[in-house]
Image (cartoon, rainbow, N blue to C red; front, side):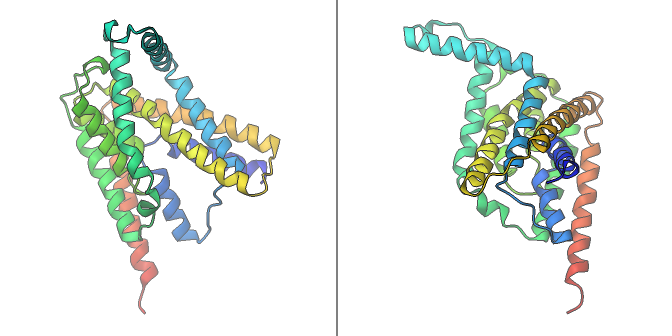
Length: 277
């Protein structure tokens, strides 16, 4: 793979992983329109996943630092028998809620191949679903809860939205941010929760690609790998900042307009490609 190809794939990975427009949906549409299969199970994809993971860790380093410190305190309390005596705090509650949201995804992730087998009409409906959830979430105004005020029902709601995102065309970040807003979370809290919740999903994708890559001959272009990692990380950070800025300025629905347009484009391409027999 050339350096140019590595950069292009890294930009796509960095942007679509975090913008609420569905990377898997765009991938399916790209494959349908170009007839070009996207190579999976390559070591470069592992590197790109790691680049996007680095973007999350950098963008939310303070949040992650607090969560890691609390996780260590909980482990120490468990080993010393003082866990139940420790006072609850926002970081602990957020950790527990993240575990609940992630746990809901596990049984569905085991059969994720079923979700990926979609036709163009279904793909269009999934893009339409993303458009509608972003539209209504952007207009939801009861956003007052902080991470320390989350309840189990909030984590379940966000977790269910994440499960829906297994369908190509339904954005994971868009669904989880929308779920957070519908649950009444503050906008910044909804974004933080959404992207931190995405870490297990990114790690899962990385592990799956690595498992596929090691089955074959692993060829590593060091220059392409380094450049791809850096590009994916930088692009990912910019995408995260863009999402946060639009959400604060109440312009989050711009993604709703975009995904609606993609839904219409998908229907149009399906009708055109079907054509007269």
